[in-house]
Length: 378
Image 1 (cartoon, rainbow, N blue to C red):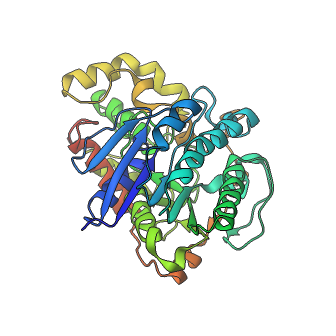
Image 2 (image 1 turned 45 degrees about the vertical axis):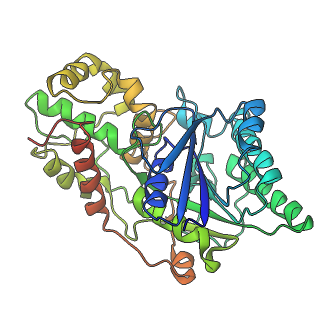
């Protein structure tokens, strides 16, 4: 018998759609997905509702009817598609992200008397590297907050305030903050899917009869990745685990890698040979090949949009950052602005799942091909 009902906000996004898959596979859960855009794939066990979280009046109407919701996965975000990284420092954008959470949570908590837990999604920006803050070599969740303007903190403080208000009214519920590193998944039209632009780059190169050149700076730029399926497993566990109550967890696959190291595996999954380094920012280069991409979509009968902007969103900018290009000049970035994130707290709390990042990357490129988002392997 179903005991819990989870509301997933941001259901069409990189994290939201994998959270929906994970929760819906467990028969103890009823699942409701909320997003502005329709989901990429329907799920018969999931109810979908189209809601713009910036529309306060409509949010009041929708969420005040959800008295049976017991859990929330909040993975919704608004980004500046014209200036992805610059938007992260925009105070108006921060306020919009706060308003989205307020517009959902206040009417929901007013009626959901058996509400038990909320997963709130943050990210590596919690540690301040995007804002030019000095960050730690190893980011541990128990470190004091590196205070800077960040919508994560606005949402977190608001959530904590709502928890205290509920407790004062005799209603106890808990939260878990998830802090993933670079997320791997198969969402389309997402501003945060850094893998998909690499797949488009590969398709263009292959169609031109060229090897898969590495478009980055050539640096062995260390990074940590998190498979969105693994992140969704963490959220499912956190929803009911006593060790996850009111905790902040870093999320990674469990290893450290670089796109240079992963490049042969990516080429292999695309059926291509590795070419020489061709240092070029994809946010500038890919739009030049819009017509070639549209031809590829038609030639291989892909379900991907022929319009590159629609298909990729602002994700090439995110990819460029991982490839070693700075936001200001898209030039070689020799000053590391990252820190390695420790998952020790998550492991100690009771979650013990990992995945090799190469296996994860291979899985998602195969998924792109299976879903006909990229041409089949050569």
